[in-house]
Image 1 (cartoon, helix red, strand yellow):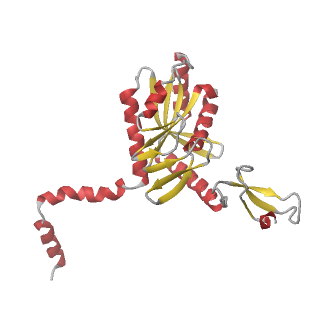
Image 2 (image 1 turned 120 degrees about the vertical axis):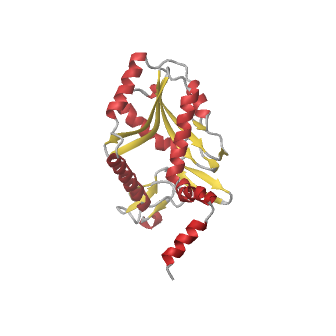
Image 3 (image 1 turned 45 degrees about the horizontal axis):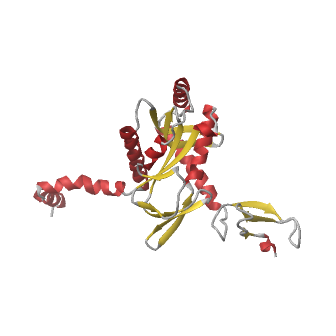
Length: 265
């Protein structure tokens, strides 16, 4: 039996309408990836900015990768205006979201499943400081903004700069005090464009490698057994274990979780 001929016969026997669905079957796995969901979320934020922010007063700069002392940092959106520079971090998530400004980790809950994720305000802090260093701007001139997109619901009160969907546009428009002159706005835009790394595949791969290195380092470090937060290495100063090293929760004294040094017993 000629299996090649049989295969061709089967293909030719399929209705023409079926072929319209083939690209969909190919795309479905891609559409479900975190990468695509992240890009889709950024696109939604970009569209909202273009539709609802006056282009003559607000200047949108997308996907900015900046060099840092230890590698690179990537900013989803920067919006430059006379009312300040807005550094936007986009989170495409679903489910219930629990957290507050001071917590290092927030919680995402989908039905009975819960998982921790880094406080996006802390995540955006590095972006803000890197940009401030580049531009020479004060804390009053730069705003950190976090935008959740997707089917998510805040279950705890959030700071005003943590928004859902188009709420970030309202937050930006609510800032009406002039913090930059027109000339300073232009200088900021030029500084960002000249300071950013070129949007090349090579630079993107370097940034991805840096992120993976940071994630791998954090995953190899112990987590606090009480709050699951970060831990720092400390030295026992008294008692039977004096001089020995142990890991203590970074949130001490609020959290007294520890690992090692026989738990200071």
